[in-house]
Image 1 (tube, helix red, strand yellow):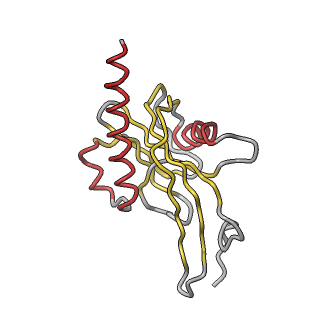
Image 2 (cartoon, rainbow, N blue to C red; image 1 turned 135 degrees about the vertical axis):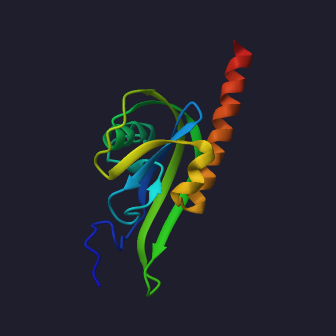
Image 3 (spheres, one colour; image 1 turned 180 degrees about the vertical axis):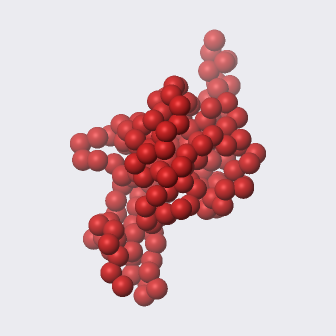
Length: 156
């Protein structure tokens, strides 16, 4: 079966960004509208475009998928996402740069690749069927955010 996604069966990895956005004790989750993660809940994000930095890509993707403005806090981690088909061929290969951010302004309006987006209390993310890696990235981002907040308070 031929996959109609133009990024299927690539000759190189695609670079993308993911952004763990917090508003108080809530985290922003988006339900994907396109393959390879169609119908899955995840953190918002997408492909880096030619000529933009990963930070610019993070801001653009959040705006496109949710309508929100954010303030980046820092880098959480870099993740390799490699999906293989039944014949063990690489069907999708992404290098994902995951950031942590704070909500700055705006109301959620799901758009672009997101069919739904919502604020979820951090203690309820287990109810959304997140992939284990996504769940771990959110928890890492929460730890990083809290340590950055403590550091900022000490300098005041």
